[in-house]
Image (tube, rainbow, N blue to C red; front, side, top):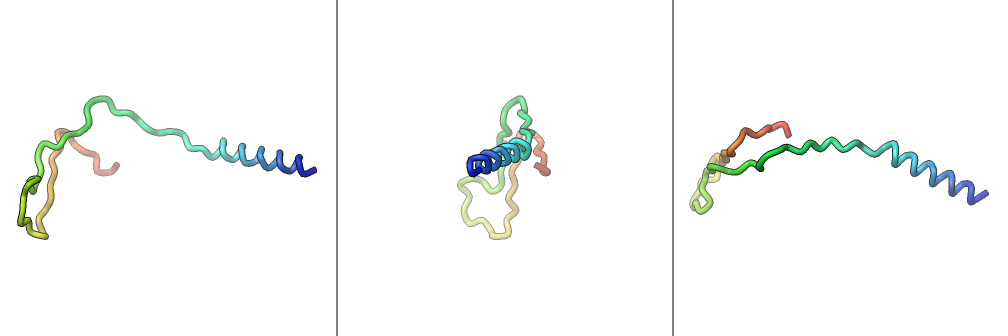
Length: 66
């Protein structure tokens, strides 16, 4: 009787794992990774004010919703 309960429990766990596994929705993008072409402040900048707006410009448009 115990062996039957163990087998049923294992079957339920396996079925749950198989059903609940999400599909892989990764979409590979062909091409090169984005590169930084401009930034403010510069890498070696000193005495930057605390309220300085930091900007970065990439070689391609970024999608802010990702």
